[in-house]
Length: 225
Image (cartoon, rainbow, N blue to C red; front, side, top):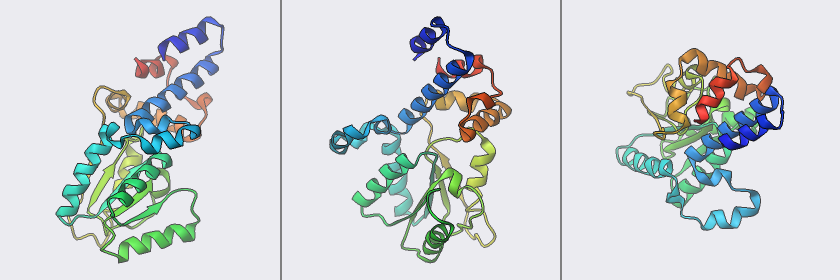
């Protein structure tokens, strides 16, 4: 990772190009923290299906959390920034015969509301999988009493808004929130950033525009070290 960036610098690449390369590396590191299979290319799909999914420490932690939550009668909202990760979780829940609702940004407003209504009115559906950007605001999901952030968002305010979906008027239970973090990784480094800097970094990823980055290139590079 660092060598590739150094080679870019040596070749005389612009700061903009180095920023883009740095953000790409950060994205890959974030994906690896969630599940190594997120880095697989489409051509590797068959191999992915045959892989032992326990390769993801987070997935194993999620399995334990899910099992305990279901045994105790809890209902969960599970947020991720990556729809590719949500696809893996859908497969996991199907394998375990656990009913779930699903919502991401590709769905129409009517389809989203239909899934919300289905979850809210069906106590037998214990899990709702949501992409963070699509499910983070404007939804009333008081049917859940447990919130799981599978991967941390750069902006703490965005995470709080997502968690608040379960803290709406009509909620009668205590709501518990979990954040799954891989120790010793870029996730831990991002959480150590001051909230102001995390918010600036969130703006970059939401806009997908490295030119909008207000963090210095040095700050970005530090996250890779």
